[in-house]
Length: 286
Ligand code: GUN
Image 1 (cartoon, rainbow, N blue to C red):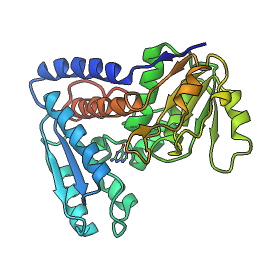
Image 2: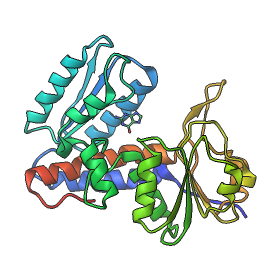
Image 3: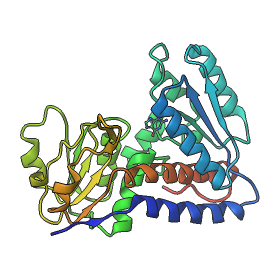
């Protein structure tokens, strides 16, 4: 079997275009404020891409680049100002933060109604209890890719590799809400390969290059690769050995061009939802 490639880049581009058309009819520009503390090169690239996509979709706002030595108090004060700014619908503080700043304090300082990353405990709690919420962009993007590819989720056996708060845990919650039977595997899981072979949906989010081999994949399974790892030669690879896995899978996402572009499209969708909810232009989409 040769897998169908789930073209995240094309799916994200189409959704961004639809979103831009919708923004043009609103009568206001949704505002997205992005904060980058320090000059981590990978974070700089991610932030630049988010900002570019936001501008292209007709959003207002900008990126604030703060020096690495910015104090936690100064960052919290900046967030308080953005919380109070009626033109700002979404606030995103790029992670990771410098070690002297408590990440959780920053996440909890963001108004949950403007938390377009979906990291605030209020939004995480609402997600887990099945209430409408702002949902973390990468996990929500993964669900969009499954839906757009036509992968059957209800009743399917799904495995999520990796239990991070940004990806693994929320993806497991979303799959559970979508009626999959979910295994959340991690570094202490015994015989990961055997667990994986039972799954009809595999979500790999561990950050280990090509950990998932071809013979871990059940025939016809859907494989979503969240990993973005840099090889010594500078090229990118996922958490899945793509060539091997494509020979077994029914569907598979490439790296790059799979989950990554969906994360950005979903950030824009979340910002539009937050804007509509705050400005009373219709209910926030779940
Ligand atoms: N760093 C890596 N992924 C993310 C993300 O989705 N949001 C933020 N804010 N930082 C990140």
